[in-house]
Every structure is written in C-alpha cells, then in structure tokens.
Length: 92
Length: 404
Image 1 (tube, rainbow over the protein chains, first blue to last red):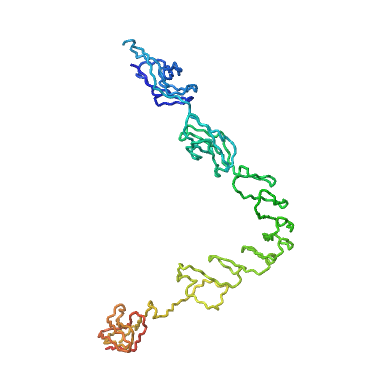
Image 2: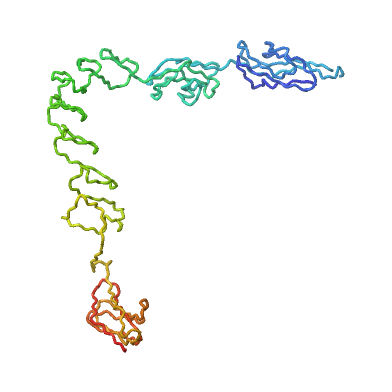
C-alpha cells in the first residue's frame, strides 16, 4: 500500500516568518505512478492555506517562503494529498 | 486496486516571528577617541543578552570586542585612544548567535583630539571634549599683549621666546625682565662682524676640522696656536711628509693581558734603548735586532731556580794514534755541596760511560778516585753534580794514571 512520510518539518522545527524553508517527504513505493501533489497548511485542525497545488508527482520537496501574515503558533501541520497508480489495472 | 488516494500529515511544528536586533545608534558620524559613545539597539523576539563589537570593514568579525553578554541598554563606550584616526563599524549581535546581528549603517570616524583656539575665544568648563586637568600652552607673538586677566591661565608661567639674530631686543619688552644669555651658532662659512650686537663678551671659538682640510693662516676664526692630534690605527702608514706630524712623538703600544708576546715579534724582542737615545723620524720602529741573548741571575732564595755543574774534558789520547793504553785510575781532589758523579767514556762512545762513580758531597777539600784498568785508545772524563740551589763546586785537581 502506497504511503508518504514527512522528513521536514518535524516536531522540533521552528521556522521564522519570511524565511524560505524546504518541505520534504518520502514516498513508498518508488515504483508505480504518483499523481500531482497538493500541500496544505493547517493550524491545529483549521485549514489555513494551500501551500502549493499541481506539484509534479515525482517531486519529494518544495521550497516555501513563510508569509509574514501568519500567526505565530506551535501547532502548525502540513498535509500532502496525491494519488498512486500501482499499475495493476484494477485487480485487487 | 490500480489507483489510490494517498494523504499524509506532518508532525506539529512552530512558525514564529524572526529574532532581530537593530543597531539604532551610532549609524554614522565622527567622534574623538576620548569621547563617550552611547551604543543603542533594539531587539525583537528574543530575550537573551547581546555582544558588541567593532570592525574596520563592513564585514562582521568577533576580533574586536567592546563588551559581551551585556544585559542592559544602552552601552556607554569610551573610545580607546588606539582607534584614533580609524574608521570603524559598530556591531550588535544576540549573544553567541551570529545569525542575529546588525551593524552601524555607515563607517564611524574616530579622530584625535585637536583643537585650536585663539586667545580671544572663551573656553568654558562645559566643553565636552575635555573634562580632565590639562596644561595649556599658547604661543604668542611679541606684539600680543598678555594681561593678568586672561581667564585661561591663572598659574605662574615662564615665557620662552625664540628670536633670530636679526631681531632687535629692547629693554622695554614687557614680557622679559630677566637676564638673558644669548647664544648663537654659526657655521664657519658665516662672516662674524664685530658689530654683532648679540655678542659683546669674549668668546672662545672651537673648530673641528678633518685632516683633509687645508688650514690657511687667513682663517679669521683661529689665530691662536693649536695642537693637532691625530689618531691612527697601527695598520696605517705614517709618512714623513704629513704636515700634521712633524714634531717628536712617543710611540706607545698597548697590549691586553691576553696578548701573547711572541719572540718572533720583531718589534718587541730584547730591544733595549737608553733613554737618551735619539729616535729619528726616519726610524721605521720595527727594525729587527740582529742578535739577542739571555741573561739569568741565579737566586738561591727562589725555589724555582737551581744549579747543576757539568764539566767535560775533550777526548784524551794517552798514546800514539792507533795504539791502546791502559787507564788504571782517575783521582780527583774536590769540594762540593752536592754529590759528584764521575763518568769515563772511551773510543767515540759518548752515550754510554764505561765506568761511573758517585763521590760524596764534602764541604771541605777531599779526595776521591775511580779504579778502571781498562784498555782504551782515547777517553773522556765527565764530572757533574745533581741539580740544586747550591752552586758551590770546586775541582782542585784531576789525575789520570795510565800504562802505555
């Protein structure tokens, strides 16, 4: 079963506003076809903004400049949404 | 399943306002090295202390620290004198974190304290550039008046004034009522007129010339007798024609105690001169003495000195050439403070005596003999004493008994 695991940010990450930071993740498996990816920013359970959409399925990192307008908080998370085609053509 | 949705969420992380520190003062300007500079800054999003530095370029460096881990604000900095004439940048940074720092916007010039005022200018104690006690010096021209009411100097002063010879000095000069001695240095090229007003007293002129200078009788600055002295090294040749050395000279040679005086030194071996000997200028002073001798005086009181008597006859041939004779005995009448050794050599063998006998010392005349009975063509008698402090040896008679 396909899965994604974040490398950065981690629980110890503290990013300054207006800094340009790198968001990175790893995908399993490397085989098959990964669809376009979307990164979302949440504060707690509240959706804040879309960081990037239509990011190529082959990408595993993204450089992001943190907006100055964001609130300072320690409960931000990032979600990645994508698809994976394992090439089995619909067989279970 | 061929295509599946995949979602993932990161761990919670922090987004924060950036930590900044901004140097707000000084950002430019000129300061003297004695001046106090108030260094000010503002910091955001951190509470740690700050470090202050200065650099000579706009590139940050921790080489020159003003203060570190400072927990107050602002910082009052007494600019060190070593920075006089230097342009610097002042830096503030979060203590130990060089990613959070700022510097003055422009170079700050540090100058030395120089100030010039005229006497007419007031000097108030509120002048910020000098709070310490100072010694004020001022140069005036003779035309300037000096009144006791000058507010900038209440202490006694000694006025010194330098004049050129061309300036007149009048008794009415209000700034100098004491006796003065005027001194004037001239070069030899300068004429010295009698009318020089600055020198009415006798003067003694001293002149030093190099030997190469010609000294003419017309030199007006030297009419008294002079004694010329010249120092030479021993290596220099001394020619008679030199005009500066036509008088009698006493040559001295100085050696250090460490010098070895080698007998081959031709200038100093056994050369005795009487005191009244004339030493002519033409003496080359290094003539080799053709003969030399050594004279010793035996001094019995000196334990290092001793005496040894040694008498030898020549080769004695008692018979005709080629014929042997028999020496029977050698008799000796003698007086000696030391033992006498009697040795008899024969037939060209001077190295080994064929007979030896020691006769005892005797303070009165006595007789000794040695029996031989040996056949010889010719023989030699040797009489010697041991080495001692006494030289008292008398050989009264030698008698040889021979059978032909």
